[in-house]
Length: 209
Image 1: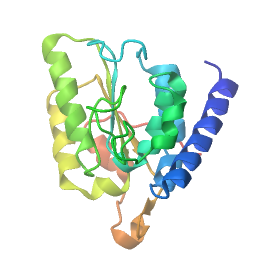
Image 2: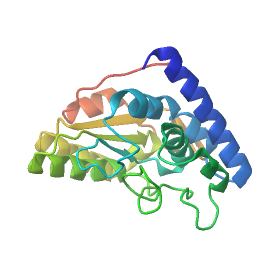
Image 3: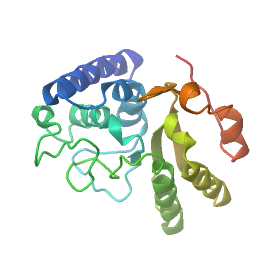
């Protein structure tokens, strides 16, 4: 898909996010909006997925570690055709498939139930290791927020990824420099993330907007 088409989808997903959170009267629009480009690029240009067969065992997987950005994921899944965009009006409503955080048992296209920050990379490492062990050709992607990189579990999982040579794993960091209650530097400085991930064996690529 060409860049103009992807940009148009990003614009629509942003509308979806604002409409969902405004209608619900709650949610995390900021952290959702900052993840839009990554999710759109993955689902519309990179990942091997089929909305008509969301349980395909060889599909690529996405773990949204920053689960509070669920509106962004829902916007992308809806626009991709996993479910009707009419579902957006039910975001955060009782019994809705679109819960405040992603629920893999309720929502088509959601590969992992997330929301407890710092756990997404370890979930993705488990998926990637399982795929390698069984010869599954799928790739595993995870999107985490920069704030959750303050969790020790992130680095334990990264150590395991390097140890097991998980070249089928891609970690994307939404480096928006913000927590819910202040900037990263105000809460806890993250230091040189490029150097940190490189030291754990990652091939680090930085994209600056």
